[in-house]
Length: 184
Image 1 (spheres, one colour):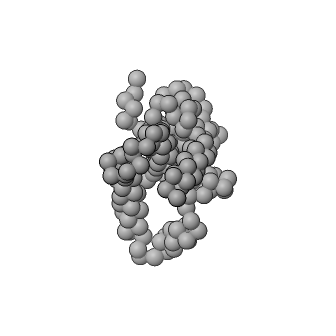
Image 2 (image 1 turned 45 degrees about the vertical axis):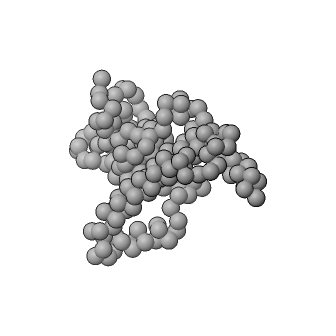
Image 3 (image 1 turned 90 degrees about the horizontal axis):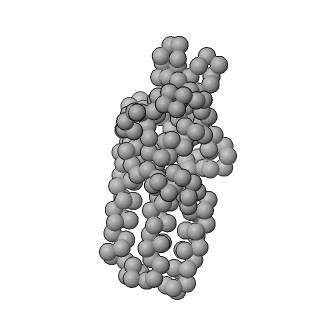
């Protein structure tokens, strides 16, 4: 059995089909996205040439999600990314983005850690459920970003439990409405 810390090797055949070398079956882009959201790195290589195609397929996954209305990247960020390819600044953009996502993950982790200690609402009944929902939401939003070693979804989420992003959004919105009523 392969160590889960090793990247999952996916081979692309001449027919453009993607083959999971661990499970010995063909996979889709959505299957690969699920593996990444669960916290596992992937490496996609062309079977014949051995070329690393990982970046190309990760960009394709992002483009498909963006085109389905699951927009995460604002237009101005996308525009700036395109511009960075034509300027001399392109050497610092990857490092800047990686550091920005690292800082985001660290800030979110600290926020969740401090939420129970510094928030007077923490003593309120049901607060732990709210905190668990927010943690699940943050994990879902940040898993796999920029080759992250960031938080991965927990076992319940991986089994298709309450980790569906739409359910989390609805529940979070409902909890925020309840908190607003308590504070107002």
